[in-house]
Image (tube, rainbow, N blue to C red; front, side):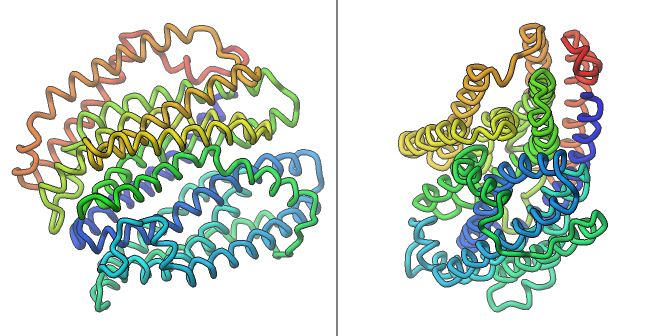
Length: 516
């Protein structure tokens, strides 16, 4: 039933919404205290490296390989066998993570040189980035074990726990910025310690829920366990699948390190805003459908598998396209209202706006990638996303080299969005070619109605937004009230457009077998 999927997605989305709200508060605090200069450039790199590796390995390749195998164990084996599998995975994963963490701490200078080669080896950005990376790198181990725990909880439909967990990251970092940073000789280092502490807090939060389910792991290193070997076999090709967007974002940082001071920070704040719709709905719905798709595959229910994908694609487009319109048209007002305080100037708003507008092009494709890739991972087909991921990553690098000369940091964002479009298109093509997915009837009418509603929304916001200079020069209360009016009215206008175009709630919420 798509109603149950919608309910689960709503739960994950609402929990993620709370996290994103605290994330905005965190970004407002850091923008006010640290601005968008050399120190924050260094922190962005020190935080992005372990965060990137967490998304690539823990939430990317590991989760996409682990969840389908765990779903099979849940459906076909006893609880004791599941527990043994969880213990073996936890011990093996923990051992690998410990080795990687030690390597990252010891080799921090070389890691920074690889990921931010534009930083001067003897400059303040490089030295700060190395110091903070040694503090933040253990976050990789802590948050990866948190992602492991969350994958178990999601497989057993405890979606809200994993979705709520990132709230603690934002709360701890806010506290670190306000209270810990002033105690440091270099204030920005307090933010790095906040990242480390937040990793431990998130892991501790999830552990009791696993204990209640009698799946609290007792780590055992066992590379010979059949389940572990299957997960490791599936992990290797999955690295370049759904996580390719994270590779592209890290490549953005690499190229931006060669540009003027502030470019890394402008991309960081743009990316943070773009992550809001991706996290609240894109990640939420992909998190919910992967265990469901895996169970349909295990039960050899081809029709349910295809219809679950179809439902997810329609839901993503209903949210992803208007989100892209809002972020493209209101990029300046959003940045000004949220971040233009203290050390974050009107000039920084103007520069970050350029990259956010380009990132907006990729919002819907990024969401669709997560859904389409889940179709392959549930089928345990890792090779196809690998090939597509490599093609998308190469295109991103080429586009970066072409666009960066004229558009600077905005060209980097545009290259990322265009490579996401390519990734999405290829995933869809091969899903159809392999007969993993057959669209329901009515897609042409659905697409036309959706286009109508989004054109109406775009016109309304373009008229209401006005000149960016008015936002930059006005006081904070005016910006906040005016943005709230525009966003609330945007919801009303969009849903009115959908209604006039003929889209009704039952088009999404009806049971799958009656769909079409």
